[in-house]
Length: 302
Image 1 (tube, helix red, strand yellow):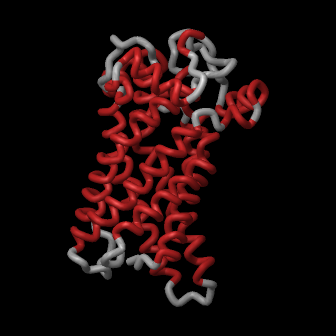
Image 2 (cartoon, rainbow, N blue to C red):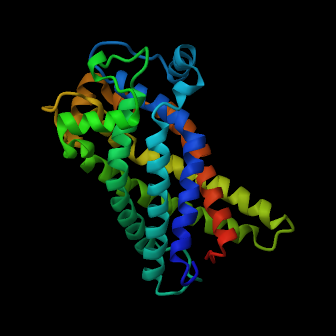
């Protein structure tokens, strides 16, 4: 990873986060709307991710797909910077400076879980605002009194009605999702990256094209692995963060039990279509951007 280059990992991670939002936010908007409305006992339901996307485009245009993007850009930029920075530095410390070692679970998993747990404190408030903005729109079942004019207005109103702690509603669920999900993500990424580079070593193909190809495949598949592991927790988080009822349980496992009673297993995986569709391109873009930025910044990659 290169000594004395710690701050560079944070810069590369920040650029990576911005590219992820540009590619993935429209998919995320559809996912959040499906998670909110298709797990209700009654009310409007979308037939599929495509139906939801069509409704958004018809009623709000492309802008509707980027509803809540401002906190997402800010949150993901900071989150991705911290995630890659802490993961890289923790991994380097556990490796003891040996950059030639193959991927090892006892190094990757704790490094990724630790980084994931730290970024959950950044993600929780930004995602709460993002989700509350995303569920709005002509198809929303949220009462008009709960409509927000902007992300800042949403944050202010949340603090007014719920206090500062209201911004951290769903914090435990976010921490579980990020620590577990990133352990899965980085384990998949490191092993795929190492395996593919080992197989392509000595290839006559252009090195830049190899790096891009490996980044696309390893990043995309790692993103799918992340969401396959933690989507039910994400569904629980969305409901906890967007439901006005303060008496509703904040326990993710009790929430999943409630969702299962209402909507079955399908409800626990609400938004699976757009999530899977988003996971590959968004995470492929993030990894390719991270590795390109690392190369420009002169970070040594093991």
